[in-house]
Length: 419
Image (tube, rainbow, N blue to C red; front, side, top):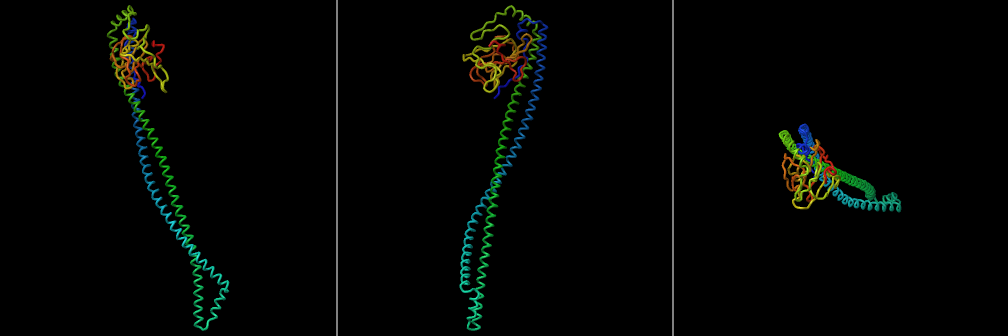
């Protein structure tokens, strides 16, 4: 899950310069004007984010519509596969029946061929007899050898019967041959037809299975896209909530700035007289000179830049000790203090340093010790180091923004903040 970069806007009142730097009333008025300008920018950001949320809702609806279309298409393909399976089964049964018919027909063909063979042998015998006895002449001898008219008639009828029988044998042989050719041709055509239909159905099923696999892949892609857009939408909704809280804190900061200009002037003068009075306690890091100080004691476990295939928009300071203090890196006002699913216990502070706006982020704390709208000074403890949210091991994730927050716009704090 991506870390949520919530919007940190100018909830600061005057920061190092205006709180303790001895700025004039004119400079303080300019700071109030800057805060109002940042408040207007927050309203614009809220409007832009809401527009993006509306766009995300449209994308989600569109993706869900596409998923419904794909699901309907998959249902139709599923029905077609079922129908094709049924036809394949039917044609397979038909093919088996045809094969059985072929086996039976082959038996019939053997019988016909045996009859033809017998007739051929008989005809051959007839032909040899004709050749040996003179054929028709032999029949004449039979007739001429009759002893009476009655005997002649009997012999003539016998000869005619024999000749008719010979002709019948020839006719039956020809009929059997024709029947054999017809049956062989019909069986061959039936077998080829059923086999072709079965091959076409199997090819159709393969195409349907390919289409189903493609639709499954498309559906998976659409679901992944919907999940991503939904996560983006949730991130934007959380940003909108933070922006609303910041808008309230800025309004409070403006009022506080206006009401306390005289007090700020007094505090600025006192700060000039006691600029070296800061001290640390226990394991609290010493307060550095300059605009920023180190936010926690420990070792740098991860720097700003590419990391694990992503970009790390901050610096991690690790310390396994107990109750390690986290302090404000500069004077400012707490814009946000809440729990985030990604950053855990996190505090955002906005600073106005020499008329320039900076924003700092302190994430993964085990405990927060400041609330929204609270004015803090450089080195003041704001929490305790921990590993809440999406964190591995106890550390402080520290971010620095040059001006108001913009998505993925944190700058490298090294060289600006003494880390």
